[in-house]
Image 1 (cartoon, rainbow, N blue to C red):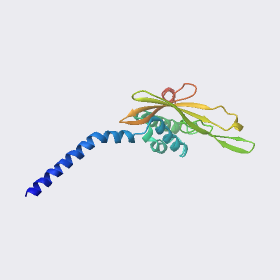
Image 2 (image 1 turned 45 degrees about the horizontal axis):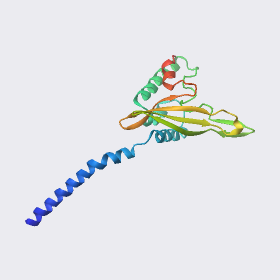
Image 3 (image 1 turned 135 degrees about the vertical axis):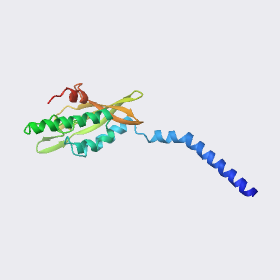
Image 4 (image 1 turned 90 degrees about the vertical axis):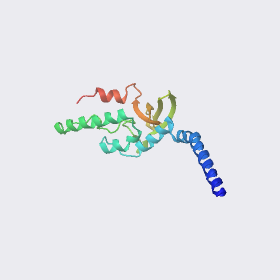
Length: 184
């Protein structure tokens, strides 16, 4: 009996120590698993550049995990407006007729019979508590003689995860402004 009593007390102590361990270290482990704004943008562009660019529900949903809730709603609304417009004007080109707007439309260039692809570089990150801007530079090899194009990806922190909220193009326009301003 006495042995069982001490065994139970020992298990209670172990359970308390384990619970204390979880309380102290679980937040550290969870925050360590959260991607930084830079790594979020890197993962997003890696996925974006290796998947179809057509502006469709399927392709938007494939990227949904990287979008903030407002950006995702904007895309869905734009799809709805585009669908209604194209039913009435099937020969017209839709606003996102060239594809998703996360990199330049000119993905490659041809010089002397060779085709060159663009490359992107994730640059400087500026952060506040709940927002971050990550610079993306899209460039082409020297034979293309094309100037680099710089974007800023604006991210927001949603439920402890960095999400793409807007794209700021090299001329200062933003994706959200373009979508809001566009009228069919």
